[in-house]
Length: 309
Length: 176
Image (cartoon, rainbow over all chains, first blue to last red; front, side, top):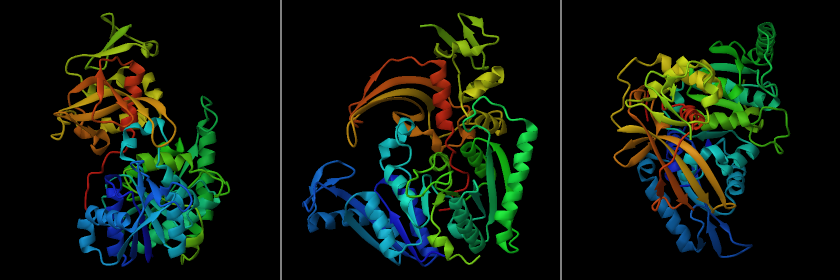
């Protein structure tokens, strides 16, 4: 399922959890792992100087400097590189999100793996700042392959996954997310939990929904899941359907914890918006921020169209 | 500033008198914690004043988790106590200069702080709880941090704690 993986890293402790998963995936799936660090933004066109994205200091991007950065990356990941058989370390100068996307497209990778925050110090104050790392948001928005965001230590190897939650809002991107989640669940033998949250908050704070109305909506959503998803599963019976009412991101997090989910799969945004124009959906962002398991966002059909389902 | 005391049994007292109902009018009051206050005392607050649980969308879920925990001995050996503090931070790079003020709940061991999101709720409930200082950080300089005495309102206290608790803690299993 994964032949080529791209691990986009800041090469700092913020990406350590993601690094473990990336190297583990490389070994377990016999994949080729590209470890990419974008070291700085050129100060101006063709300038030999770069502004380091982390320190903000100007550095001369000569071969010595680039070799030094690669050497630093080798030191950072020395333990993980010991067992690695098919990984390549690379550094590029440029705007991080653009270079990550360029690399992903060039190598036609099956998945991009990233940490959730770009700067360690952002963690304490995520409340009033851009919550998820801005590079991650931009990559997740535009990538044509699934992007897995890892914010916490991962507790289960991907091949041992037993519970995968797919959160759907019945949009087109959610359909792609479902196909990818289903393919993964089938491959690793995990139970696929198809989850929908009936949003009782959107735009109507304070307006109470009657129990009957909620039950009708839940019944309709169940039928929609059966028609839109279950019918495509061709006899695969290791699944469950759950529909809860509430605020979507709160409910999906609760559900994932209850099921001890190993992975949450979602489409990037909650409405049918042109993926090129959409920002990272607020539901996904909230889930990425708080989830204790990795979150995969799938937006494009490219890598799921090949799915043999 | 009007002051209220949060008791270990979850009750609020104002000027020595027990607040029986309508805790909302005390949200802007400065808080003091009774001796022996813990995170468990914090959750008892919502048992006494159910309306306060509506202040944050994650609160009902946090309360559910709290109810599933043991009645005692929910402690961690990795931290000495929990601390609720306030940070005023001037940020200049990258991006536009800006000033941010936020509250945070963290674990403290000696002088080192730890994020509570890496702990499970059942290892925090009975840890001693303290109100901390206001930290003033200028342009990311975490070495020369100024510290000042400060006050916390009841709203800041509830909202700040629930913000931290809304992050799902690290699951029990750890295989890698």
